[in-house]
Length: 423
Image 1: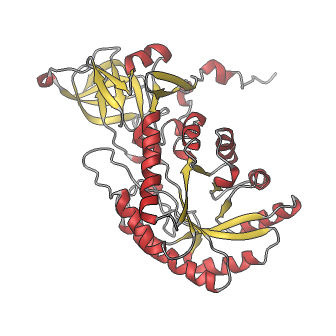
Image 2: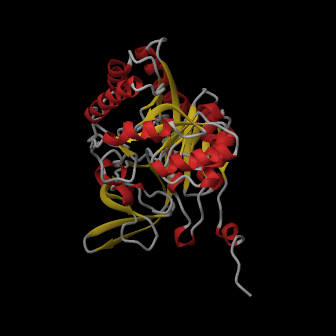
Image 3: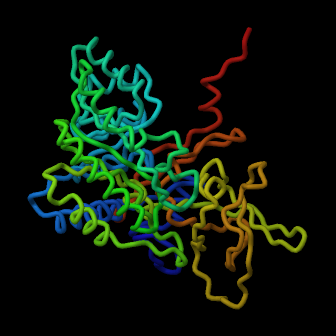
């Protein structure tokens, strides 16, 4: 994770001690670095600008699902980011956080009538449409609201992006997009619908992609299709390339550089006179946050050594859902390297899969000591739940010497206030 440092043997995010954060809001808690968010977005934007050049228009539309806290979105809004949303809730969050509607794209296979109507009336940049039925529904709603709905068709290129199957979205057997071979027919159909305006094309092949080759193959197919569609008279100006660029969670992962990615985009799309839309999520937020947790106790069972912490799978689902690996470090620096042992770091939830690390090499395992699960800024808090009737944990944004609670702890008492026993 970025902006981590030891000061007097205590781990800090920027200039704030994780010990102080734990004392202030308790554990578990998500902690983010504002400087890291700014640096990541700026690096992404500036690298693209340098390679694409001033003649190529582009929009960075942050993927809100990766981290949907309005405090995080507001930091990116201040940098002129757009947003990629997949629900009316994410759209509302983006608007509240300051992102203009004309910089928002609405993706997702199951947009409801209510969601489509809301987005139509907010005048968003475009709808990334994923089926003919959605097109028909959007046309009907646009007409009834006396609006024109700008659309891009999400094309499924049948490209395997690699990585975990649960986040590979560009192959034929998934629910996403319209088959590449059928796309031109769907554009013809859309062009004859009332209330619909074709403005672009969309593709997204997955998440945490470590190889550039799937992108290259996909972009070449999309470029070919754009040229075919334009010859048929369709206005395909916005080319939405989705997100999916991976980040390095541990030393074993090798990820291509953003420079290589940008050069590939320029080589394939640089002469198409278009606006290119990028939807980075994890690349912006992933390494800007950590999950701070406290040791409850240690336990040995059948030659396995366990450390039980107060964070659990309901707080951070990635390890069990994707078999994801995250580095875990002690908040108090210890010099007794020879005393280190291997432990399984587990949570208290009643699931065998509630494991954060199968083999963590640490030393200081006393009850009450703090551990930091690194690179948890993406798909952490946004995927959390109250499973086992546990609190929904707080989120903190660090800004230099200051900490801001950007989500209060939602206690069981808060959640119970929404429930009733029938009389």
